[in-house]
Image (tube, rainbow, N blue to C red; front, top):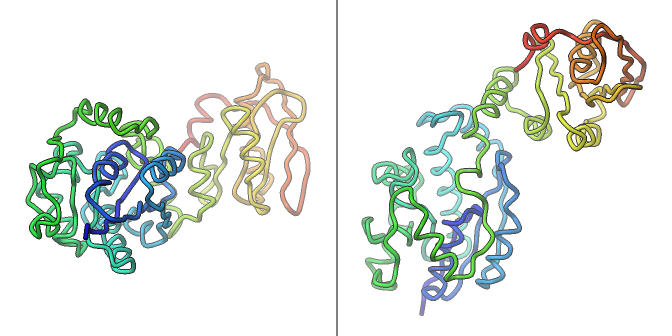
Length: 328
C-alpha cells in the first residue's frame, strides 16, 4: 500500500508543486498550513484550489505565543531583518511531527529547494532543523531529493527517486515549467510571503517588542497599516495612508483606542492606542494635520472619540522635522 504524507504548504509555488509531484506516490495526504500573523499575502485561495485539485484535505493550524517568543528571541538568530528562519522551521517541523503522529501518517513533504534560500535551505541548515525538531528521517523534499541524503521513506523502497525533478539554486525556471504541466496557475509571488523579511515592518515590530512583553493580535494587525509614530513612551499614533486604510483603522480600532479624523479638510484617519492627555492629543493632531490638504499655518479641526469620550481639537500641521522626530 502507498504511504500517507503530510504536506507543509505556504501558498507559494514550491510547496504546492511538491504536493502535486507527490500525488501519484501516496495513497492519501493532508495539506498542512501553519498560519502566523506575519503572512504578507493572503494565500488561502491558492492552497484551497490546489487542495481541491489534488483531493487532499487542507488543514489550517495557527501558531501561538510560542511562535512569537521565537520571533522575539530566536536561538539561531535572524536573517537580514527580523526573520528567524531556522527557529521558525524548527518549530513548524516539531508541530508537523505531532500532526503526523495524530494522523498516523508516514512522512512529511516540503517544497524546499536546495540552495534557494541562504539561511535555511542549505545542507547544514536542513540537517540542523531536522535534528532539533525531532523530524530526522521523516522529511522528504521532492524538488531537490536527488541532491539530498535519502530520508526513511526512500530507504524503505516505498518511493523511487527516478521520476522526481532535479531542482536546486535560485532560478525558478523549472518550477514554472512544472507548474504549467500540473495546472498550478495561482500561487503567491516569490519571496513575498513573510513580513519579517521586510525592513520597514521589521523596524516597527522591533520597536513594539521593546515596548511590550508580547504583542497582542490587534497590535500585530495594526503593524501592517499606516504610518507609525511613538508620541510618548506609552502611546503610539497610527496615521492612515489612503482611504482604504482610513476606513480600516476606524473599523478595527478597539474601544479603548482613540480615533482622530479631520472635520472639514481632506485628510487621514488616525488612531491612538489609548485615551491620551490633551498634550498628546495636540501632538497627534499636529502630526495628522501634516497629511491633510491644509494650507501652511491653517488650523485644522479634528474630532476625536473612543468608547467612552468624544471631543474636538484644533492644530496646525507639524513641520517635516517635527513629524519625523516621532516616526518609528
